[in-house]
Length: 174
Picture 1: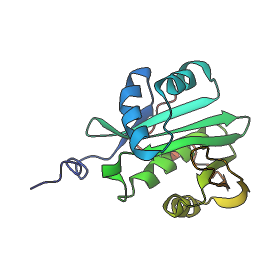
Picture 2: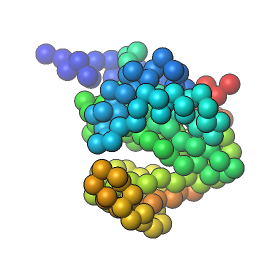
Picture 3: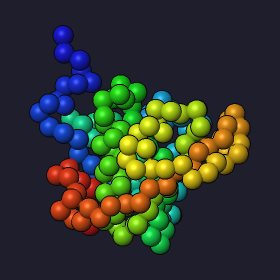
């Protein structure tokens, strides 16, 4: 029997596009799976309609949103606000693809560096970030309000991908 979460993975890769307001219900499903303190519908709505620094993308596979990522692009620095995949798609390198696309988009927008916070206990995410060139730069004590866990601050310089470096399914920024 074919695993439905793998159907179509071989035929076509993921498609990346800008997040739309009508995507929010699907994004909230991912949020609830991925985070102990998920963002609300209102938070996403505000990011998409009122925060001119915010850039959010979705990752679709076979017409279904399987992940999303967001950042704030301020001057020449990108700050990752969130990145998440549906649980069924984790451990398959899709998070790597999603982060790569976010970094390419940041570079395309003129960002020179990128930063994020990650739970000090989240070794899986930290390993992905290190693989992508992120390096620890400090901690934020008690950053996570659900359990007062510290956050590891990580930074990376962004390579210059150029427009030709964006993948076939890249986010259309026009």
